[in-house]
Length: 141
Image (cartoon, rainbow, N blue to C red):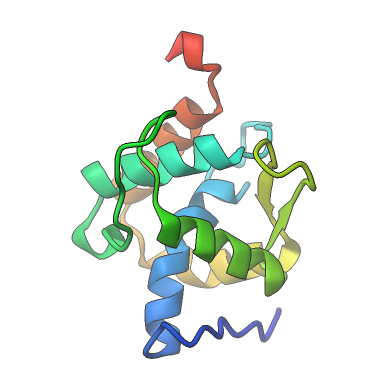
């Protein structure tokens, strides 16, 4: 178990930081899709996946502002959150800037394990479905 803290001066408290981190951590976790061997999500796929979760998920997951971008919806706040998650050791990222693959570190999955019990079966199925779609090649979507 980790004692990871999610510090960021823009968040009023740790709860807000966890709420903001929950959608990307859920999408990057193998705990939400234990029977699937999925590749890490690139920046583009993470952006689209979190956007989908916000569009159809519960209200507390609506924490990022997205704007139209060349390759689909884009959130500067999500990019900042992903950077913070990598810095805090909760996520790992491949070094290629735009094509980095995000996956949770053991510490990130430990945090997801603590929070996943709060999700309903419907929410878990939503995350699972979005994760599968985000993993598809764009021509198949």
